[in-house]
Length: 343
Image (cartoon, helix red, strand yellow):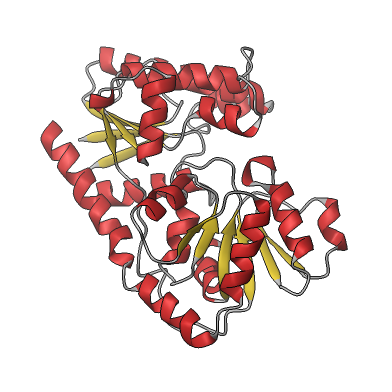
């Protein structure tokens, strides 16, 4: 069997979507399936386009057209599409990592643009949802967003969360926890302004910001902030083991991998009522804390870093004991069952 995976960045890079794509590839290849990744470099025409906005706008059309032509040629295959990447083909499974329309409305506090950009990607997502046979939403919140904002029948949306390789993220060699850590792009959607407020108002606390891009200039004036750029994924477990707490002031998330990666190292996590934090807090998962605003976030962070070591490390061990919930072996079972049904 051939399975096409449509994802703009493919399995390259360290983003959450790319890591899920890589995970899907490994699972399917272990089943003896031929996996072909349809990313932006797969098509010569899109690979030659240097303007990213034009490339992003054209890529989903190329994917849809290519898959349709393959079907007309009589090629037998299945398709896993990620988000907006295959909007005009009847994909077997569509992975909904979030909702572009909800993201834009939440972060920018206005409706998406109708011209190329957020509005076009929302348009692609809506049609991808309409055409796809099955949708796997990464959280209950994302499922409700696709149902309410895109009018997708909830009966074809199944919640399938993100999972990780537990062998990579563990509790061994946990050192003295030193930092309050942030992991993510230092941009508006990740709550960069709130993060600056928290760092500034806890001057005696050491912060470690791990990002793919440099911090804004105003962070340079803070003596309690260490910034690390482009840390290899293999080094992330060491980051979490040295973290007193992971802080995520994001305004919008789907089901962010960074939260479950931290928890699998026993590191507590605090953030707003979004993404994996929202889902796990509702399920009373240990070590997950929700704040209502930046002032509250700073207070919760301070309480956690002020815990005496006996209570703090007991909390870490309690978190660690629940980590099997996130094992990628569960994802392998779900993905295997899905394609066994389709044979």
